[in-house]
Structures are given as structure tokens and as C-alpha cells.
Amino acid sequence: MLRKPVSETLKVPPPAEVDAFVNNTSPDAYEKLIDRLLASPNYGERWGRFWLDVVRYADSSGLEYDRNITDAWRYRDYVIKAFNEDKPFNQFVVEQLAGDELDQPTNDSLIATSFYRIGPRVRFREKQNPSNRYDYMDDMIRTTFQGFMGLSVNCARCHDHKFDPITRMDYYHSMAMFWGYVDYDTPIAPKAQVEEYQRIQKEVQQQTAPLRAEIAKIEKPYKDKELKAKQEEALKKYPEDIRIAVQTPPEKRTPGQKLLVSQLPLGYADDVDAVAAIVPADDPNRYGRRAMVKVGADDEAKRKALLDKIQEIEKRMPPPLPMANAVRDGDFWLAPDDLGDEVRVGHGRFSPTTRSAASFRNRARSMKCRRFISRRMARTSRPI
Image 1 (tube, helix red, strand yellow):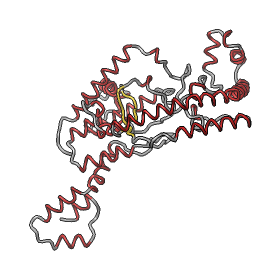
Image 2 (cartoon, helix red, strand yellow; image 1 turned 45 degrees about the vertical axis):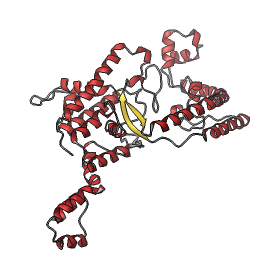
Image 3 (cartoon, rainbow, N blue to C red; image 1 turned 90 degrees about the vertical axis):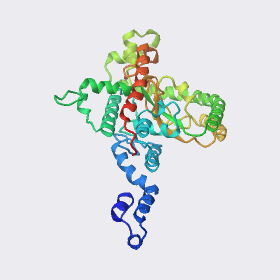
Image 4 (cartoon, rainbow, N blue to C red; image 1 turned 90 degrees about the horizontal axis):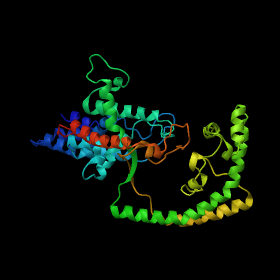
């Protein structure tokens, strides 16, 4: 009687605990044992593991880069807490599928939407490879239907099965329900703390922006020289018409030559100054994930002095806010750029000005659908 509930909740009971239970003559000894096991935090740790397996939880994103997901552990702790608190199943479902859509979202409901972000992801040049998003949608649809409804639907991405209840049309209707979301790292600190942090951050950015602009000005001649050397080396591999297009002054290029030049990976991004005003100049992972350019000794001394000033100003920054890997409604193409994203013709990237009003209407429909599907899947209110 003792071994089964203890091993299912914690581990194999030690001999001393077995002897104590056997020698306990109280008529409610077994009930007290069960209550103690259910009240133990180890209960959620033990049984939460099964749900984390269902929703493909991992601390890294897998695939070719296998990047660490910094705050994924908050979702793990959310699941453990839900089991320990005996959270109603319908609330558990809604928080994960549409926790950001609740009338009064909480930190727990926002953390729960990490459900969308803990699957396999490349997390690099996502806007340059928009086909990746369809793979992520497939992962979300498959996980949602298998985890919450016990239905395997991923075959319907490509074809219908004669006797399956889910058709390709149903599959892509489901994709439309999930499409209108974007990744969003949200602070989960008190409102006053967040506002104070943002106020100081804004002041620091305003004070350091002129210094970063000075650094960009120092680096520009060296970058131009390095860019020219890279271009000359790279151009040797291209046909003569492409070399002529690059060597023609920009104002004299034909439309065809402009298109050719814009598609060539010949160096840094065009707007270096704008990037330098946002990303710290001493950050080795600055735009394009390239290290700082080498400069002359005199300019290096000037740059170091400016960097020292920046670091002194940034000492005012309070400790980083606790963050959660959440989601919110938005347009994927209009979301802030992430690792490796570049605005370049021919790289699968749309300008915000090309987005039609229809895209915003579709996003609004998707917002309603995500909330709707979460409620449909949460019809039962049994505890976990």
C-alpha cells in the first residue's frame, strides 16, 4: 500500500518509512499519507515532467544552432506550480493557448504562453527564411492537437486521408488561428519597477547615443576601406556585367544594375550609423554579429575613451528585469528584427510599407480565433 503511491509521487520509499507506516495503527494513516504526498512540492516535479514531454519542452531550441532559451525555466516552473496548486484543467489550457488574451492577464498566464516558443526553432535570420515560420506553425498545430485533443493532424499539411476527420482545409484553418502572433519578451516585475527601469534606460540611451555616433564616425573610414577590399575580392568571382554594375556610381546605375548590386552579399549593411546608435559599439555581437573593426592607434585611443564614458554612464542601469518568453498579437513582418535579420532586396523580406490593410484585418481575425480555440479545447473543467 505504501510503495505504490510513494513511488508514483516521489521515489521508492526508504525502509524506515515503510516500517513507520506498517507500525502506524491509526485508521486514517493511509489518507494522511496521500495528503502528505499531494502537498509535497515533489508531486508537481514528478507529474509535471509528463506534461513537459507532451509539449516538447527543452532548455534549448534545437536544430542547427541549438540556442539556449534563457527564460524557458519559467514555463517549467509554471507547470510544476499548476500541478501542485491543482489548477483547473480549463484554466491550464486557456493560459497556455491564449494567456495574453485574457481580460486580466497575470504573470502566470503570460509565462504560460511560452508554450508557443519552446519548440524547435532556428532563431537566426528568421525573416530571411520565411518558410521556417510554416514549420513552426506545423509544430504548434501538431503539439496543440496531440496534447490537448489526442489528434494527429500533421499529415494534413500536405494531403487528405480518406478516413481521417482532419482535412487540409481544417489544417490551414487551424494555422490561421495561430498565425497572428509574434514573440514578445515581457517583464514580470511590479509595474512601478518596470516604469522606473524604463525611465533610467531611456535616459542612459539618450546620454550614450552621441557617444555611439562618435564611435561610428571614427570607424566609418576603416569600414569603408574594409568594405572596398571585400568587394574587390568578392567581385573576382562574378561575371563582367555584375562587376560593371558595382563599379558604376550609384546615381548612374540603371534599375537592373541597382537590383543586381542590392542582391550581392558584398559587405556590411548599409545603415551602419543607425545601427551604431542602437547597439553598443563594444558589443562583439553587434549588427550582423561581426566584431568591431580594427582602427589606427590614435583612433583606438579615442574610441576607448568614448567606450569608457559609455560604460560609466551605463553603471546607472539597475539590475535586469525578470523576463518571460511570452507572445502577443502582431504581424510577423513588422516585429522587431532579431539575430541576423537584414533589410535587403531578394532576401525574403518585405518593407512595412508594402503591408496591406488586409494583413491587419487577418491579424485581427487571428486574435479572436486563438482565444476561441483555447476555450473550445478547455471545455472540461476537471483538475489536472
